[in-house]
Amino acid sequence: MEITVERIADGEVSPFLTGELRVGDSLEIRGPIGGYFTWSPNTQVPLMLIAGGSGVVPLMSMLRTRDRAGSRAPATLLYSTRKREGIIYRAELDRFAAKNNGPTVIYTLTRESPADWQGEIGRIDERKLSTHAIPAERRPVVFVCGPTVFVEIVAEHLLRLGHPEAAIKTERFGPTGEHS
Image (cartoon, rainbow, N blue to C red; front, side, top):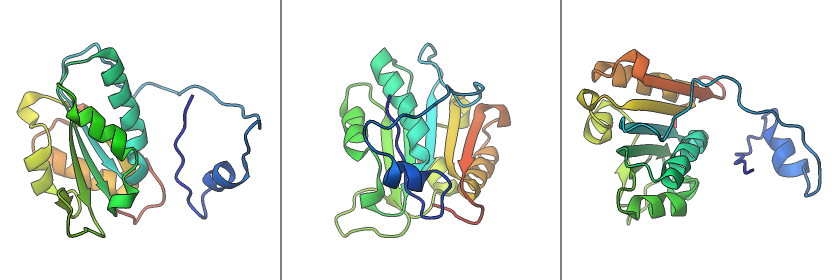
């Protein structure tokens, strides 16, 4: 089992997991509750993933599942983070994207963009979604994960672009007022 934790200074759990927990310590864990934010590789429905910051973590699980299963379902990840150094799983995502039938991976930086940056710059907005998201007429299932405000704004843009509400699955975290 593997977990990815982003340390949030005033977080409820992350300071313990990143600063106190030691190798050999015991934890009690439960499996996921519900099945709303899940994807099955047994479908050929296009997969559109949109991440803000550490919201990429559950989406990465879907991409790993897709890769292990040999799924040929079209897949795109649009991933927003503040700076290049903040791209979680960058090497693995780039390896997936380089594979035959791998997902399309688009990064966008919102705070710092080095001179040699080849990806997008700025927040995920309607223009970036209309350029990079799988179009609504292809009927993708869309998963959006990130800070609350990010998720709400992206979902609103997707609705305006014609994606049906039932096809947009959202998972949000953190305080309101943030947008990656």
